[in-house]
Length: 67
Image: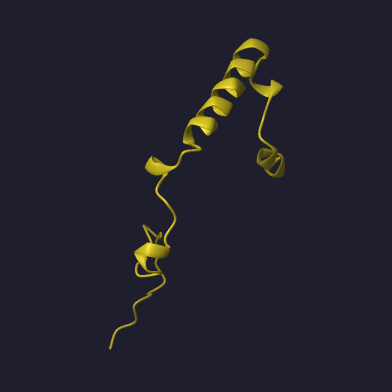
């Protein structure tokens, strides 16, 4: 029997998963999400502020964790 890891470096290419839950219990797809228009309007407003005052003028709160 040969060893699968022989000391050479390798990179993980992808991960898959399936059968986590019944489809009836799954989240509603974005195509049917009635809030998607609201999200698009918010993103559009943020982009308008960035165009007028520059990119750093507005950001999402979650981006503060990256700094």
